[in-house]
Length: 68
Image 1 (cartoon, rainbow, N blue to C red):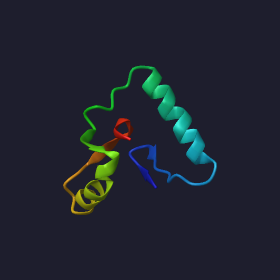
Image 2 (image 1 turned 60 degrees about the vertical axis):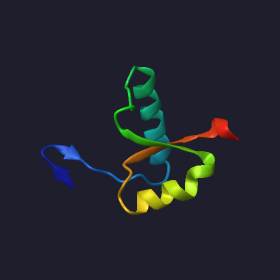
Image 3 (image 1 turned 135 degrees about the vertical axis):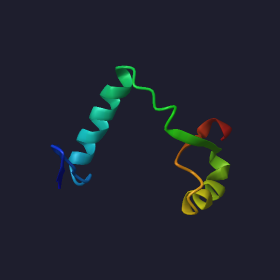
Image 4 (image 1 turned 90 degrees about the vertical axis):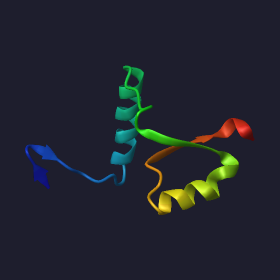
């Protein structure tokens, strides 16, 4: 699909790794994703987080693994 010169592609197969590499490069160059993450959950809060995702109350979330 092409909209205004942009090509949209899904993530599949080996291209998934390419996406990870590009995102790593963006983060290392100073990109801040803090405005995108709307909620932070402890690992024990995964069920509640999934429930909230399911009803549309959460945009992107972060899991806190330090609570293990």
